[in-house]
Amino acid sequence: MISAVAEMYEIHPQTLRLYEREGLLRPSRSEGNTRLYTDEDLERLEFILNLARDLGVNMAGIAIVLQMRERMEEMNRQMQGFVDYVRTEMLTRVQQQAPPSAGLVPFRRPVKPTKER
Image 1 (cartoon, rainbow, N blue to C red):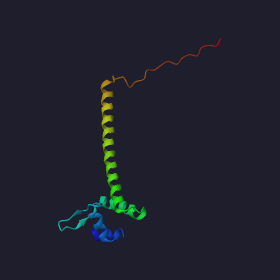
Image 2 (cartoon, one colour):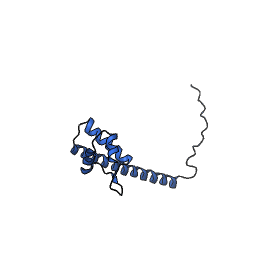
Image 3 (spheres, helix red, strand yellow):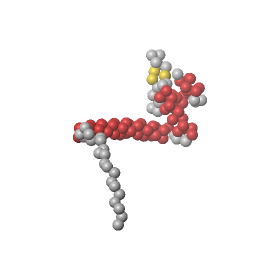
Image 4 (tube, rainbow, N blue to C red):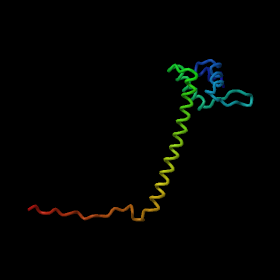
């Protein structure tokens, strides 16, 4: 609830309402329209407060940083999906091309040293 979160982070409930109005936070609502903050919401709030309190970033700057962070996370998910796809394709192709004994290394006899002249 908003009062518990405000007390926990030592901020005014109006600050939380402002963050929500600005689109920085999006808590869910109960049937009685009470704001419900998830652990994810609280992590986001901590990030916002760190930007505002510790780094002095204004609201517009916070919004930009959050948008950039979301884009980077999405790009990371896409890149990870691409890496997984390439890995799967390579393994499939290697398995299709390799004969059953391809993993074996032939044993070689030791070479006898030759006498020097």
